[in-house]
Image 1 (cartoon, rainbow, N blue to C red):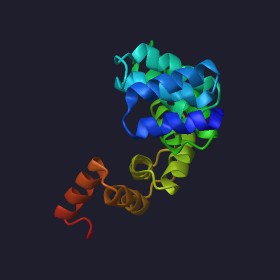
Image 2: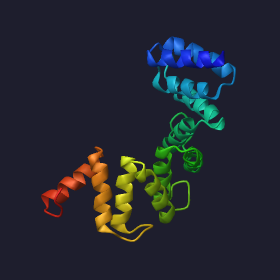
Image 3: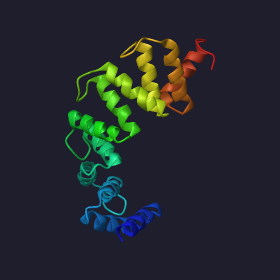
Length: 195
């Protein structure tokens, strides 16, 4: 029965029948179905089928996050990092990025790595940043590839290696990462590399 309602709610969401999706996800949340809280958060965040409300979005994402929904953990971390719908809190953001990363959310690895690189909410640790960026970069995350290239370029958390820096920046560039594309173009124009 619940599986049918979950599918019906998701189908309504895909069909952009947001009022129906909101009603169904509200019923599922009352039954404590974990992902329903995530989707309610999404609807509130976007203002789909309901007035846009970042605070209610955060509350629902947080409820799903505490129920171990990785994408909700990532959204909670983002909102805490930005201070959207909640009070900005870098250490809490780092905690939730780590929780999402433990459950395989690749974007969480990249964002947690950035926090370690910059020392926001955690003690600055270039080696941890390197390990986390590399894990995300190896899965094809363009931002992580760019960030890993930057660490190689500056020798932060790893041996300085200009070749590897260019290699990772090129990978990010091929995926459309704007900063990486600009760097590659500039290096090509300066004759430093042949694309």
